[in-house]
Image (cartoon, rainbow, N blue to C red; front, side):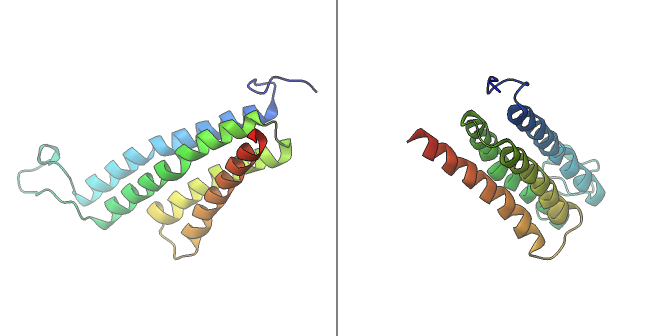
Length: 149
């Protein structure tokens, strides 16, 4: 079957686009989640955001900081995935492996946020979610390097 790699006729590219869009939505929802925790705990980082003169700026609310750390971890993990997975698509990988790698990364990042910022669970839950994404992204990056040699 001869399809263009960057075409929706290519199931690997289509899967990459789908799961990337899921991750984009997931990342965009982190800001409202942070805002929800800020309002719930009345923890605002800027004086102009304070809804009452009686409140003070607060930088150390655990639930807010937990969501912010999860969001930062997304930036450190998901952005490299976007690039590595895109290049991986260009290598013409095995369809089953590629689609399941993309799926595993997206599900692991959603689970990471869930067990870190929404319903904190003890380790190794967060570590398993983190390393699933890390290892999949490393694998794709290594395949890209090997294909370019």
